[in-house]
Amino acid sequence: MEFSRNEIIDILRDDSQNDWLFSLADETRKKYVGDEVHLRGLIEFSNICRCQCKYCGLQSTNKSVERYRISPDDIVLYAKKAVEMGYKTIVLQSGEDEYFSKDIMCDIIKRIKESDAALTLSIGERSFDDYKAFKCAGADRYLIRIETTDRNLYKQMHTNMDFDNRVRCLKDLKKLGFETGTGCLVGLPNQTVESLADDILFFKEIDADMVGIGPFIAHPQTPLKDAKNGTFTLALKVMALTRILLKNINIPATTAMETLNPNGRIIALQSGANVVMPNVTTSQYRKKYEIYPNKICINEEPEHCRGCIEGKIKAIGRTISKDYGFRVL
Ligand code: 5AD
Ligand code: FES
Image (cartoon, rainbow, N blue to C red; front, side, top):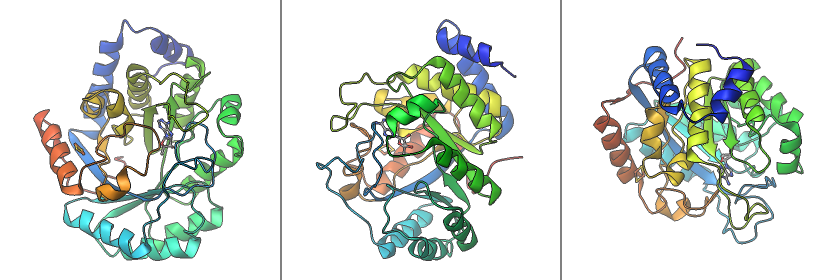
């Protein structure tokens, strides 16, 4: 199914057809990517960040965060343990932490790639050269959300960043042959449904291989502390439309969805999503990676999350993939 920009806007505005929308997204998911759910083992390896994204709890100006950096040796260890637990993809995510230079990252990538797993990076804006080196070292995928395609809103939210550079990053990553993931926040202050429609069309235009969508959740130690949260339903609708328009891509049921709805990830898996990214670090780090408040699983250990999510996925008649979970053709 194809929708025009105006149709997308109408669908986003009108909640009376939501059941139809979510069913259509679920059917599209089943038709193009099947019933398998891909689990990606997420390692949040540093919460140190040079950026000042207004919505994010880890922004450099937040002095209340206890900062941590997991050593390269321990990152590799966590990754190996996750592979032993059955994960076929490892995701390394961090703030924009300059300690993790091109060389240090390449060393980590090479060591993790000795295990039998695909590797995804989510470490922010870098130069073409850095991305190229990461690819040569063996990284398979890269996530960098555009956050919003509304240039004005982007500027308001990221005072020390540049929208065009973010787009440049996405284009470089595609050019280098990464499976490239992007996505947006839903419910930012001053965000319009028109701009959300443009976000979805942008994902299609750049031919994103993965798209992660989550509601904005106000963090008490940020300039947006008094802003209203995004809603679960609108985030789910943007995700469902993304599935319907982009068809065969990978779409995670994001953790932020579950923060706003106790069954959020399962509902997302039944409305277009086919990926879940459980945390595979120990609980000592989890509470310190507080991008937004009330993140789920912060007191859990890796084995618990694996069992928990497997049980939930099987209970809705879906299976856990034993494959790497690259984008299907
Ligand atoms: N609420 C929801 N999601 C957030 N992110 C950052 N801050 C928040 C927040 N307050 C998302 C961004 C980023 C991803 C890692 O987390 O979209 O790309
Ligand atoms: Fe972590 Fe359920 S996935 S407790």
